[in-house]
Length: 376
Image 1 (cartoon, one colour):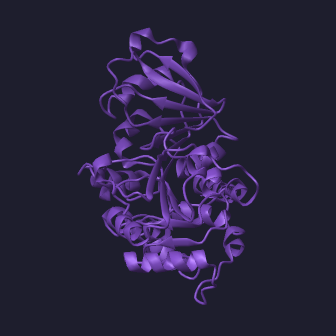
Image 2 (tube, helix red, strand yellow):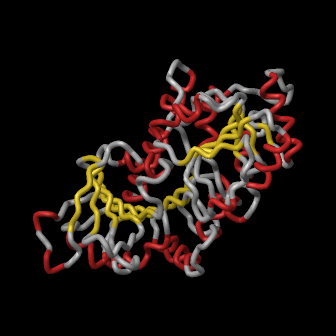
Image 3 (cartoon, rainbow, N blue to C red):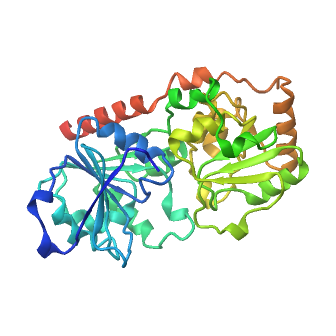
């Protein structure tokens, strides 16, 4: 959970609308991810947009019959998060009059599932920040493919979260721009200094091969299990929430430790404990287009990185990230990283990569492209 949050609860009955509750917003964001979930691309980008415009971010519906009304979270004076307590995205339109009293210039989409709400608005500009190919994720509704076609057809500009996504979307739109996930270098570089380790990792035996992020169908759990079995003297630490998989699906060995979801602010205090950072992604439909944010976050902490052959990782970082395919290769790469013997094929010059990227720079360039799109 992000630390800066106040919650305001309002009723959803239109007859009870208090006009004093309505707000004037410059930008509405439609997001499939909960703001209080893992802090990632939407939070980094939208919090920076909120520095000079007032934003309402609308999450997918959360239906709670034991709660009266929807939730409006006040992250700051210029960033509010609406959690609509309704049964469907279409029904969000019934809630919106309580919160919006003006024509909004910019609509920003992270998920095409929200396109049923487009008729409610009259946006000057529609932007689609495609961070994942959501239609390939586990449990994705079939209609999402058609909804995305509709969104792309109506968008003025499309951003993508990686090069593979860019190559896919550039075939569908003539104003597509690639912005791979960036990094808050100063935040993760705290792992390089004297910060204190968190209590639940400080007593885990060294060496530690660690991961943080969502634990879902994108993780190769078999590879994790088999590597941990080959390396009983190494602790494997998994930090993050489960999504779309159950506890019963997780490999359970004495040297695999699941620490649960942690606040973004806390991550450097865990990353500091990693001897090696890992990205044990499965190679499947859900990972076909991903560009992992954690690659650069691990770099900012100066950790050696081992990854499976994710296309965007392989393309951009094959000389700086150790790519493995099997438990045996994973085990050997851990040994090499722990031994601290230089690998002639690896060049750990992270600074050359990190100096060319930041979330501030990404958002600045996005703003300019939006301006160019509006004025062209």
